[in-house]
Each structure stands twice: as C-alpha cells, then as structure tokens.
Length: 494
Ligand SMILES: Cc1cc2nc3c(=O)[nH]c(=O)nc-3n(C[C@H](O)[C@H](O)[C@H](O)COP(=O)(O)OP(=O)(O)OC[C@H]3O[C@@H](n4cnc5c(N)ncnc54)[C@H](O)[C@@H]3O)c2cc1C
Image (cartoon, rainbow, N blue to C red):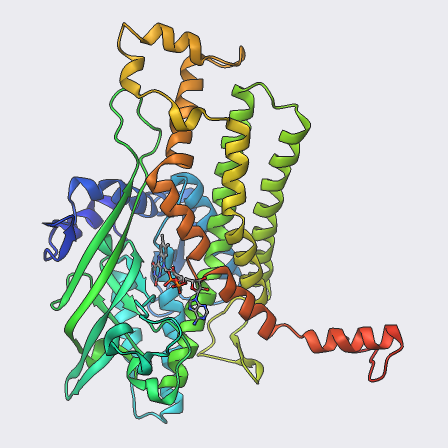
C-alpha cells in the first residue's frame, strides 16, 4: 500500500489537463493541497496497525492486503466495515473523505460487467478486463473517482431524443481496438486528484439509447480528457490555525472524442445493463452515505453543543430538543445503513422481478434501507444548518477577521466584547466562532450542503426507488382484512 507522500508524488507526474479559473494547473497546485490532505488521511490511517481490520482488507483477486477503499465486498462484514470506516474517516476530516466514489464504482462495475458478459453468452470479456484493471488498481493502491452525472440537457428528454447528442456521454465511434467517446460529466468529486476515473451511465436507458450504455476506466490525465475544477477550501488562516485543513474539489470532465481501448471498456451498448449499472452505483453510494452523514452529524452535534456552551444556554429546553433532533437523524441514518449491510446479499431489485441473484457472488447492500437512510439524512442538511444557526446566533456570520485579534489596538477590546461564557477561555470561544464561519457560512460549506442533499441522487430519486421497490400491495391487503373489506389477507406480510 502507498503512503500519502507516494500518492501526491504520483499525481505530480500526471499530464496537465486541469483548468482553474483560466489557468492550466498541476495536480499538486497549492490550491489543491487541502483536498490532498483530506484524501491523504486514507493512506495515513490505513497504515496504523490498530486500523488494520477497519481500513484494509484481503483482496479476493490476489490474496494481498489492500486499502479497503479498493476492495470488493465479499460478505456482510465487509459492508459493515465499509460503513464504519467511512464514518471514522469523515469524523477525522470533518467532511467528505471523497475516496468512497471509487469503492462504489468498482463494486457496481464488478457486478454489472459479469451480468453483461453472461447475457452476451461469452462474446464479450468485460468482466475479465475489469478484473485485470482492478488487480492493478488494488496492487498500486490507486485513488478512483466516479463520473456518473451527465449534463443531461433538457431534463424532460431521454438521451437519444436530446437536440445535443452529447448531452449524455456516448459512444461516438466503434473501432477494432476500442471506442471513441464524447460528452461531459459534471460535479465529479475529487476527479482532479484521482489516479483513475470510472465512468458509468446516469439513468435507465431504452434500446434507442444504446450508445449511452457505456462504462470504462481511464487515468485522470488521459488524452482527450479535459477537466475544469472548482476548489472548495476554507479561508486561509495566518494566526489561529485549524486542527485539520480539509478541502474538496469537483470537476466538469469533458470527453472530447476520447479514445478508450477495449481492455478499459466494461460496457458498450448493452442498454439494459446500462440502466442496472446506473442504479447499482447509486445504491452502493447511498450506502456510503450511511457512513459519512452520521459522521457529519457527529461533527455538527459537537459544534452545536459547543455553541450552546459558549452562549451558556446548554440547559435550555429548546437546545436539548434540537440536539436530540440531530442525534436522532444521525443514528437513524446509521441504523438504516447497518441494516442494509446486515441484509446484504449477492442480489439486486429488478423492476417487475423483485430481488434476484446478481453478479459473481460479491455482496450488495439492501436497497430499501440504503435509500431510506440516504433520503432521511440528505433532506435533513438544511434543517441541521438551521439548528446551528438558531443555537449560535449571528456570531459565525460577522465574527471579526483574525488579524483584529492580534492587532494591539483591537485585540483586548475584541476579547472583552466577544467573551460570553465564564466557563471557557475567550480564545477558545473565538476559535469556535471562526470554525462555525467555516462550517456554516463559507462558500465551501454551502457547496458541501448541496453535495449532501443531491450526491448519490436527489431525495426524489430515493423516494422513487423506495416506493417502486417496497411491497405496498401486501400492506393494502392486510388493511383490507383488518377493515373487513373484500380481498383482505391476514397473512399478507407473513
Ligand atoms: C457537491 C456535489 C458533489 C457531487 N459529486 C458527484 C460525483 O462525484 N460523481 C457524480 O457522478 N455525481 C456527483 N454529484 C452529482 C449528483 O449526483 C447530482 O447533483 C444529482 O444526481 C442531481 O443531478 P443534477 O445536479 O443534474 O440535478 P437535476 O437532475 O437537474 O435536478 C434538478 C431538479 O430537476 C428535477 N428533475 C430532473 N430531471 C427530471 C425529470 N426528468 N422529471 C422531473 N423532474 C426532474 C430534479 O428532481 C430536481 O428537483 C455531485 C453533486 C454535488 C452537488
């Protein structure tokens, strides 16, 4: 396994294809370092002996120990470990750990490439090719991101009906040695700091959308790929450093007639499998949210409770109620993910067929619980921000810049006028308001809130999954029986 330094060194050798505000930048540009610091944690923690079980696993392909972020889930224990590892990492960096997109994409492609080959009666070798790619990905301890979200053009039109044929990434040309793809994936987290990009379709597809059923993996600096990056760092600090510097990046990834050799292609035209891959990546990713959102809840709860301490309102009944609300959402999200792990099987839900065996035997979390957990916690983010705002008052929004706290002309006056609780040092109180400016009022925190709401699919997408997959009919039969209506069945849910 690699060290954080080796990971950064690997990125420093990559071709420059990242644009930031008009400049072409290196991956190790100073503005990307907070994000590298965040992902670097996944190398540092995995190297600690006490984290071996949580953060590493034994590859089912090579028998070697690998970073768990590059592992294919072999049993329910692996699903539990992935959830707990994600919660641990997101607590440590107080935000998105970002490497989860890689594990969720590899697990979904691993299953779908197998099923596509099966339907093609052995005329394709997607799964074998993917396993070869995965072996290198695991052995070299690479970082993967997942490019799923297309620009999508007119939301009411399906891919093949769009006036712009590149509104969804598509196969433009098929050659003897590979395919040429065209299109753009948007909002792709950590693409500017990833070694490999895994590309999967966004949505269910029809036969006429077959050119949009495409999955492949390429290095982030591949010929024909351009990235424009948005960087989400907190305001730099000079005098009062933070305990941890977190950062995140998101890219628009433009595939400009980009050639992909067959050995890197894992789906090319099998439209039914394209839709299955879109849903399966979303499912694995919603399961990851049952680790990261509880961690964000942990950080949020600590922040709200400290703000209550500074204001000396910690015993007020409304504060207790609001803290309880954060805890309930946090732990319900975790419980949903735990159940999804525990009920995991090599099975997926197929519309019209129910749960069916799927893939070569790796484990897939239970769909209903993944969707319920992500929807509940995703929708809560703005309410949680409201709670922080209610408890803190206005201080995080208008707190004076740090320079005023070192300037002899203003320093003592400001400490005098910003001190609230007699039970905490004035410096710590000031430091909390500075952190709350980061976590509640900054551009980075606003963008993270949109990510927590929409990432893995907007809440409406989870609601569609829940209501189409849940057996509502049997509940109606039960109530028909209880109410004394016709067609009732007391055993409907047995
Ligand atoms: C910070 C951040 C990080 C992200 N990271 C990643 C990543 O790493 N990889 C990745 O692939 N994606 C990523 N995403 C994308 C995320 O999955 C999408 O934002 C989400 O799926 C919603 O898609 P959209 O943004 O295109 O919104 P839209 O799909 O445009 O949705 C906007 C609104 O239109 C509605 N709508 C859309 N289509 C229809 C329709 N046909 N009928 C009726 N209503 C419709 C939606 O319900 C919603 O209310 C990230 C997003 C954010 C904000």
